[in-house]
Image (cartoon, rainbow, N blue to C red; front, top):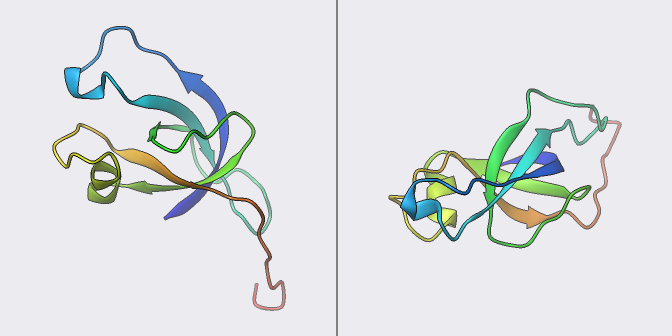
Length: 93
């Protein structure tokens, strides 16, 4: 699992039929301790209703496909939670 900030929506009128009912978001992975960007933006499916500006937890690979409810979906990343708040013990960093 990784943490990201939702930075946009993705719309595709023509796509793989198994993706027809899935909402897609543009995510910027972040370092939760510092809040800085951590890699390039990615596209992820969203089954929980996250919106632009929210911090989310996402999974990749087979976990992402499982999150869609159909392990045969052609999905690489899925949002699985919206972060309400977090606390970092800076003495460990």
